[in-house]
Each structure stands twice: as C-alpha cells, then as structure tokens.
Image (cartoon, rainbow, N blue to C red; front, side, top):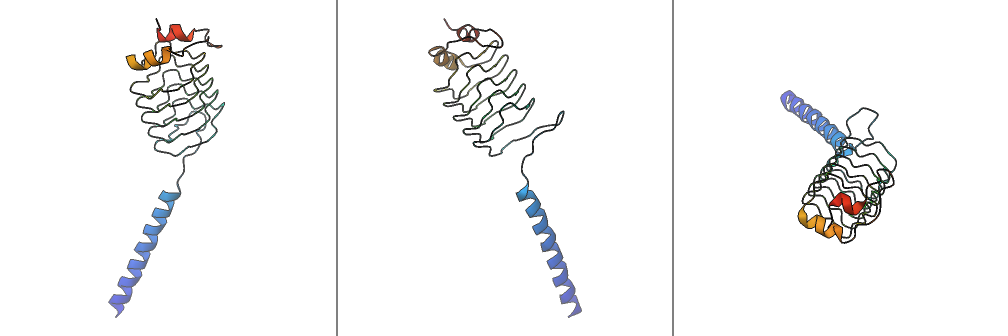
Length: 171
C-alpha cells in the first residue's frame, strides 16, 4: 500500500514537471533583438507585423511566414530569408545588402527603392514584384528572374543613385 502511494506521488510529480516544460515550450515567442544581439525568427509566423524603420541587421527569418509584413525602411543587411514567405510584404526602401533570399516567395511584394546590393535571390518567386528604384548591383538572380524583372524595371534608387535597369543588367 505504501509502495503504491509512493508510486502515485512520483507519477504525479513527473506529470506536473512534464506539463510545466510543455507549457514553457509552447508559450515561447520570438523577441526583438537588442543592439548587438542575435535575432532569430526562424519558422515564426509574422504575418502583418510591423518591422518598419527597425535595425534587423543579420536577422534570421528562415522558413518564416511573413505575408503582408511591413519591413519598409528597415535595415536587413546580411539577413537570411531562405524559404521564407514574403507574399505581399512591404520592403519599400529596405536595406537588404548581402541578404540571402534563396527560395523565398516575394509574390506581389513591394521592393520600391530597396537596396539589394550583393544580395542573393536564387530560386525565388518574384512574380508581380514592384521594383521601381530598386538597386540590384552585384545581386545574384536566376536568368529567368532577371528577364522577368527587366520587363518592369525602371527608376533610380534615391540613396545609391543606381538605375534599376542597369543594376539588373537589362538589355
């Protein structure tokens, strides 16, 4: 009888600890990075969030869901968006120098006046993207993407002075 009561008490304690750990894991949410801290939003759901005008240098947004998210005028230098979904996102005036947007969905995103110098946009979906005034100098893009973007490339980037068509290598 004493052994059975001790076993029950042990099981109750183990279950309580397991539930507490599960509660902590399920309630964890990404936090904004402080200056000099590592920013990781990997696999996060960030739909319709406002990151405008923020310093997000080196941020990790790998496989994040960012439909309609506002990154206008944000500093996303050297950030990673691999397999991210930026469907309809606002990246107007964003600084994406050296950013990795490999296999990223940018369908209907606004990249007007964005700076994508040395960025990598390989295997990304760029259909109906607004790129007026965007600077793609030394960016890595697929030939198909370049041909697609050149059809609507126009404007001069107000910060770098680069012509969008020239930065894409349009003919």
